[in-house]
Image (cartoon, rainbow, N blue to C red; front, side, top):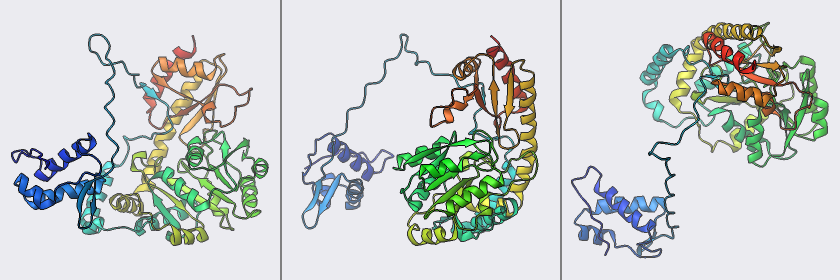
Length: 466
């Protein structure tokens, strides 16, 4: 008879103490696989605890796979791999100090962050309180796998007004970011024929699909965006593009190339275009460019976007707009997937969109980001080096090309030594970059205020003028 020591004086419940001790004995091999445990009544009498206590411990062990039960025979230890010994702790340097860690850069020109200071916290908090009051118990109920109807309707209204997209709420699927939605799309579209990606481009999309078994086809670009002739030669069936603001080059695909791309999609069975509209809200010259999806008359474009750039990456709310026939198939085959975004956040975002707060926030941030873009442009002019900026009409980053005799690796390394993080354009290529490509850096400015940009460039001038 096993005899775990239970202490009623501890804050830990008795059933949990019993569960932990039996689990430890199983993992250590003290209780061997196949060994029969006492019945619930026998063990409760032996330990002088209630049968409920033993039931709780056995139930947890069954749920985790440490025990198995056989009808009319009782409980037996499952065949569990013994726990691996804990790895030895790394040796500390002499004197017992922690090993040194790389210091975070003082100024970071990364593209995966946005301004957090100007987020409308007061408005968001007010809407959260309204949701708690008006939705109350509904927040605890299961929600539609495609997302809360109110949010999908608000997204459709926004897209119709600002992106020229005419869609219905039942075409929208809300998910926890573009990575999750990409995985769903791969299952929906299938792996046959390969997936084409822009080269250079946003490498994470291809990496996610590659890990799921997709054949990735890098497609070169020209001054108008992705080359449709190269796409045709590749034999790919699905293509991922960023037509409104190419990442990272900043190219805006003209309407002629867009129609050429749509013609490619219509010319083959099962061809689709995934339009990634990742930062279309921020255009600083001219009118907003309609989405590629708004030109699609053959149901071949899947529209993909998130609120990561417009609000905050940590919200983890993205969405896709499926063509009607794909949306119907999604509802037929994919509703087994539960929604990956909590209803609380979805209802709050819906009210944020419905009340016009999103539009006002974007308008304010355009002004703020325009000032930062201006500060970056002025700093480059004052750098005193042969340098030029490109891709300034839209988005939250620009390309900085330098001809001061240093390669990209040296530029990045010297900047890091001064506490400034900059990022090489060459990292965005899937194939070897052209040999005549000038050293170019991707300069994201969303997280840095104008004063920080100026301070960072004083350091960069010292680093790159040596």
